Length: 257
Image (cartoon, rainbow, N blue to C red; front, side, top):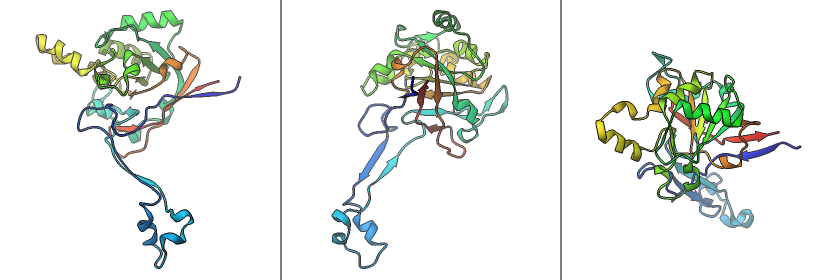
């Protein structure tokens, strides 16, 4: 059977509700005609009519944050420390071997929006698919959020991985995870309701904060996870190398042999 590649990445694009207001991508497209003055400036005497079809080049001017689109979060995103007090590594320091590994998919689409996944839920899913985690294996989580990407309610959809569920993975050697949701944790809108009840700050970003105990990375805004089997594939997700950054964009791809 030939090798098959499945794109797990979302687009970077304008006018799609993929992030909170003020944090969305802004892309300006400069086409082959608009760019002509930029090219002729390099060559005195050159006129537009001298160019094939009167065209120069196309390019784009992009305004982004490192967490737009499908991206890989570094431990530095969650806190200044990892591994119980060590300096948290930034995206340019993430070991490349973490980013190309055999992977497993959890199907948590049956969980309600805002549900916080527990270690018992992870154990039950591993039993269901008949899999035992191996060190450095990548774990991706399919939630209800992926089906709502591009809609106004996207950031409020999907379950989230809680502290104990995340630690369950990390204690077994997993160092890179992923979700089709806006966040590895439960959506903030749901967490805010729980926080209002007793003002317990430990529930805020609890899955992310597991990285303070054991450093790890996770992918957010994955796409097309429903096309993956539970096991038997590899994920490649090398991040853009931004010095000292908390995250980097990635074209995440699943490889099925």
